[in-house]
Image 1 (cartoon, helix red, strand yellow):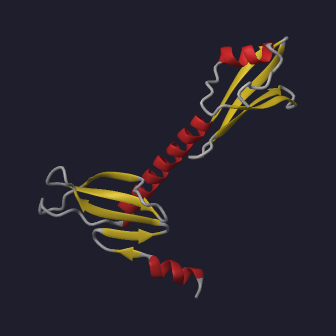
Image 2 (image 1 turned 180 degrees about the horizontal axis):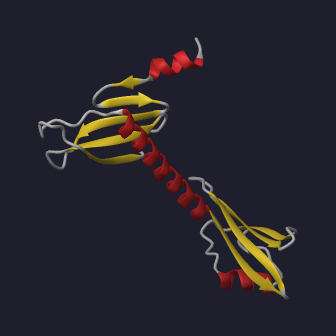
Image 3 (image 1 turned 90 degrees about the vertical axis):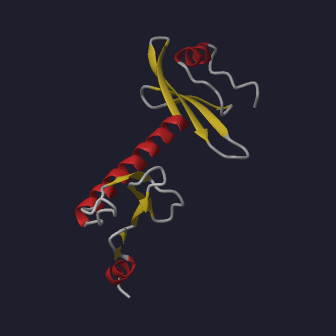
Length: 163
């Protein structure tokens, strides 16, 4: 079976449910009031990436049917929500600060490897030319600040005593 036919087989275009190109748009009853909501879930995900209000139909009781324009807008919006979430997660797991050490610019970076059982982190100092000055294990809850980076550099980049 060709890829195009497989894609057609999984596409569904109903008034309240669209499955297409890796996304599911589902119009659902809003439990908080008399209105309707739409949820956007990416294939393989248990939770929706986006849930928002949905427009009432002309009869003011039932929801407006999904259409191609609304679906495309919802996919774009849900994709942006996912992208922002990924950027936020990356920012939580990687932090870099530039400091000056003996007249040279040095970047000190903290990279955290999340793991439910054994999280870890690495503290790295890199010169402006890209050469690595130091790399040590750090606690995953290490707080990288300009002051802590400067203290570490001024002390000669010692290893963390808790290793």
